[in-house]
Image (cartoon, rainbow, N blue to C red; front, side, top):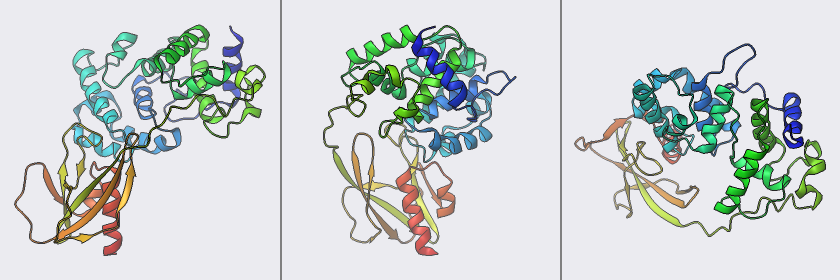
Length: 335
């Protein structure tokens, strides 16, 4: 076994994370479904933020059948607040595909796993490793950071030539034995020691042979992406109120809040409206300046894809974070 992998495996067995809710317990068979759900939730989201959502999601959807038989709206409801909602839609679509194409059993073949909606090469490899003990190399954000520093790789990891180089390293260093400990160790190392800021090099098992540490480049690697100023957009959210109910409108299935319930939007401020405090919500690719306004009056006729709910009921629906923030403002004002 190569030195790199051996050091990570030895470190993981003693210092790595062993009690995450989706990890296989001693003398138990791996649960591919639980591993799959966790890997999707962990895409672009840290473990600490995921655990509560994971526990709640698994209580409601304990297996593939339960997930495939649920409505998309209910799945989004249990994802509400976690962000990147296309992950939830893909998870639901994949459960339906597994039911239709694989008799409801999570597939073991790598190409079959890769064919599921929302699963890329690294996620498919992680599932193959943790669920089926198949030695497949991974390359998520944490691993890219470890590779960039340890092997002294300059250049933004999102560039195709840099990513291709890292995939080559991932294949070369991936051991055929103890692959679960190695893969988990890589993830743990990037998440707990080789962090983006304030890395704990003194506790790292790779310190003595790390190129970035030797050349005092830890703070400069991985090379950051050249960032342009985020585009900024504005919208007015219309909070229609009647008695103690608000109107929510279901959004189309595309876009950042696809399939969620939200307030209707407009670009112009209505004259007959009461302003609530404005705020900014930042996405990965733009900033949205939101001006919520309350509109009181008689209940208009029901429109397609709209519902009237109390603020408490609305807070339980599949809503994006800004809508939750506005509803809490309304509740606090009424208290």
